[in-house]
Length: 312
Image 1 (cartoon, rainbow, N blue to C red):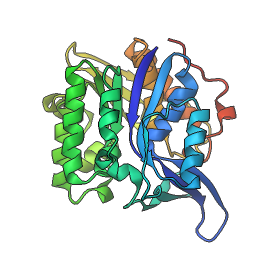
Image 2 (tube, rainbow, N blue to C red; image 1 turned 90 degrees about the vertical axis):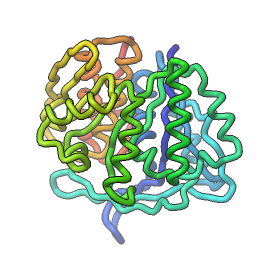
Image 3 (cartoon, rainbow, N blue to C red; image 1 turned 60 degrees about the horizontal axis):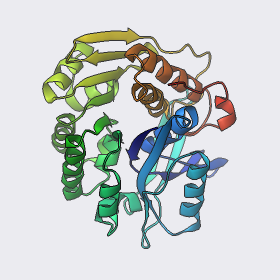
Image 4 (cartoon, one colour; image 1 turned 180 degrees about the vertical axis):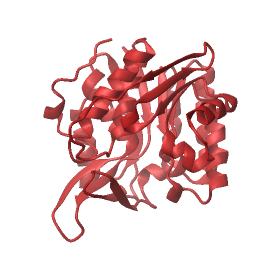
């Protein structure tokens, strides 16, 4: 059984109208990917989440629910002094969302400073893939970002694949130049990049998909998946020059686009680690994302996914 370690932050989620009806759950881009991967491919992949939580009841409740999803939580650290962050999702009539965040003192932000993080580093020796996002990197203090990248370099030298979703959120960075600097460091060690065309244009000013592909190739990425929402996805292997377009799964009604990219990543990587073709990986990603966006919230009910179980 292959092992993937997913690094990042999970927060308390409030979904609804301020001072109105709200649903409380949890979510975070990396955790969303972990959940959907465990549900769809946990029978042949060990999904391990790497993060930090507090000692409060909400933290413990989230951890229990992750375990119920089949996620290995042995490397979720416990911070005695902090509680998880919080975010509020508001949706418009087209299912597009806006967010409000309260996360400055979340345990995950300081996990590299945790006295037991050295044990996490040791435990990840031999893992098949490490996956993280631009958000996973952005929430860290500046010096910890450098430490994270050095840690990933060491794993890469040992044969671990590095997968990175750019997931650019301007509010998490001091300025554009800071974000570009750390993204460039990440891309230089990335084996599989899963990026969204809107994010790449917002950060780098790319004119079109070709500009994005050429830039990421020059920045050191080995393989790329460019996600284009309802327009589908474009895969490129820069070493073999293989390139293919895969259309998105047709969806009658979009309810909530939260986790569309996160769930696509779960489907694609589940196939990638099982040595499926890039086309099959992309179709798995679109199938999963197309299901998720027909429901509210970052993590949809498991009952809505009974028709999805990937095979290696």
